[in-house]
Length: 140
Image (cartoon, rainbow, N blue to C red):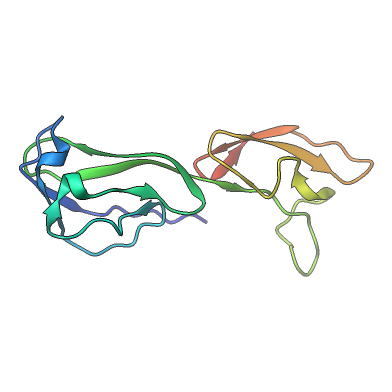
């Protein structure tokens, strides 16, 4: 289950292509799951706000701005994918039946854009054999 929400950030004097030249004012204090904004002070210069990706997210965070006085949007951090777990009736009822204890050959967590090579218990074959991690979820 993923939860999404939008944070509203206001940049005074923000002009497209000149994002670092305005003043950053956070209208609501929000803790993003994907972005670390702890290096940003409010109010403060937007150019002094160094946004980074939080743990279990990776990418190249960026700030985009449309017109003067508009909100700007954080983008670029994508969620990692947790490897599927093997089924256990009492401890992992949502797990995959006949999966190996380590269901992805690459490990327990994959970065956005990487693949999971599925592994099964002896005598079983995976279908599909690989899954791609796309922003926190696997796609066959």
